[in-house]
Image (cartoon, rainbow, N blue to C red; front, side):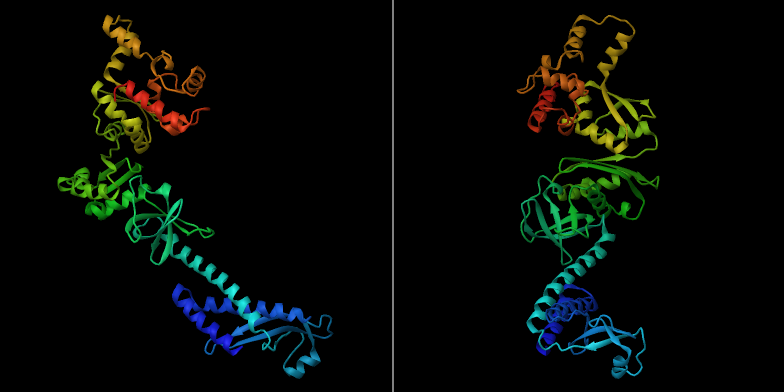
Amino acid sequence: MATVATTFFDSVKMIAAEKGINEEDVFAAVEEALAKAADKYFNAQDFYGNFQAQMDRETGEFHVYALKQVVAEVEEEDLEISLTEAQQLNPDAAEGDTLWLPQDTSQLGRIAAQAAKQVLVQKVREAERERIFTEFADRIGEVLVAEVKRFEKSAIILEIDRVEAMLRRSEALRGDRFDKGQRIKVVIVSVDRSAKDPQVQVSRTDPRLLIKLFENEVPEIHDGTVVIRNCVREAGDRAKVAVHSLDPDVDPVGACVGLKGSRVQAIIRELKNEKIDIVRYSDDSAQFIANALNPAKALRVNLVDPEGRRVEVVVDDEQLSVAIGKRGQNVRLAAKLTGWNIDVRSESDKRREAEAAMGLALPQPVAEAAEEEAPASSLLDIIQVDGLDASLAERLAAAGYPDAKSLYTVTAEQLMQVEGLDQDLAFRLIDAVQAHFGE
């Protein structure tokens, strides 16, 4: 056992240093492993005892003991020892004491080594997982630089401070292309103590990454002069960031943009040319909503239902497509940023509504144009897309999309909730609507 003990002792020292684990935790794991091996060995010899192992921290020598309780009358020979016999071994023994009786470990040899190795591996893995959880649990939301280690089918494995982290491909930007050994910026989003895969989960699509990048690039945000009130992203495409200055002499938007756009451009490059709208925050909801629709210019903002947080924004006709954005992205992000449901209307639409409400007759050319775009028209009369039939049009209408206008700001994910509408058809339908409105 001396050779085995020495080998284990050296392994414990090496593993503890390599894994950054407390040596005492590994020693305890080895002692438990040897106790299990002894239990298995002695059970095979018809000795069913309660075994404990101890490892000398200086020499690495192992000792195995059978624990027996001192009793007046022995009923279980493997677990108990009479008071008389106990006092022969230890004159101070008393009833109720537990004696540690040394056992012969010379025959354990290979069995002990194998059992100890298995338990040691398990304990080291558990200790390492606990160490990783403890180290990273308080770092959620932190942005750091990770090195690309290897590629898997659904994820990219990174290395952070000698610990593996997982970047799922769904959490990478659409334009991300990495090489092994490349260093990239990520944000820690979760740490899972029980995960079979790497415990540390990171992201490049999480809004916290964008917030931290601004903190790193903009001194006024870092020192607290400028505050980011909210941030929303459709990662890889567009983001909106609401900023507010605590110093009236500091322009929050200008501070974030930087001289000739130097600060925001550095962030855009890091995020693979993701467009970033920096929005001035306002306590006035109407003003904040108007700002959030940037780059579109709002003519009027009407708070239709403050309790339900519904608002109507009127823009010039030529600004309608800008306000709504490609596939409704601009107005959708503005809604997420402000927390309001935003209905964007053109000035001509509002004028026609007002004229109709007043009972005024429209000039013939305008009336004809209004008739062409009237929401009452069947979707099939306006949009021609393979796969769009009368049955599907009825289901769309039942879901709240009765006409082309109602589909103007919808997302593919929302359309896919309608029975019989898959992702491909959803995108083709949205593209057809965008083309109809001349985007």
